[in-house]
Image (cartoon, rainbow, N blue to C red):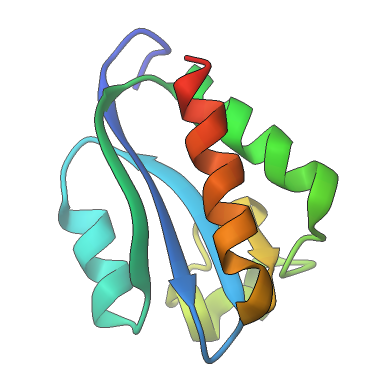
Length: 110
């Protein structure tokens, strides 16, 4: 996907693992996969680009630590390949509204 191609930007949260993830996708399949694995969809915005995801990730990096040190640690939450583990943050349930707000504010700047 090139930087100009439009896509979905999403944020999902796994309450049991206390993991908040931001990502991009060209279809709903990835978001549905996360939902099947127990994630709640917190943000879903269409017709965005990769710069929007980058802004959201940068905002989260300032406030939260990474959830996983390696992809292998992420497989229980993200699946066999641990794909997208660098986009995951350790967020306690009490701070999910704050994390969601950070993503929305980053997207609004786009």
